[in-house]
Amino acid sequence: MICGMRTAAAKVECPTAPPSRQSTQSRALHRACVILGGVPALAQHLGVTEVSVNAWLEGREEPPQMVFLAAIEIVLLHLDAAGRA
Image (cartoon, rainbow, N blue to C red; front, side, top):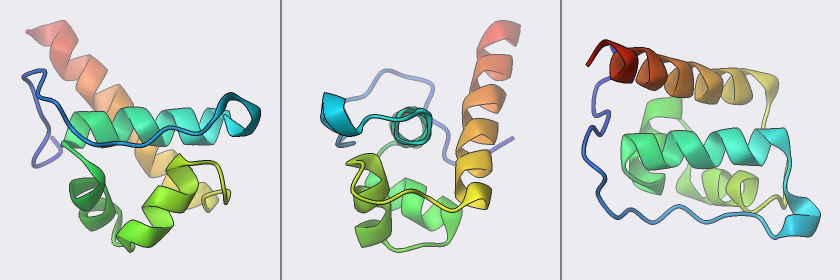
């Protein structure tokens, strides 16, 4: 289980890319950001800077493959946990 995973629908600050820059990667990272509770928590979980996370979320840069896969894992584990609840 991922530490710090949010179960309640709390308001968190996770920027999104404009439609012209949205990608599967930016959408997956956004969802992971919401699940973990915000940019600081996602950056800490991924072991990267908040500046990098914001650039990926806003679609200004493409995340490394391992970051994208980590975001997918966060989303899948969250869905799995929600399915068991």
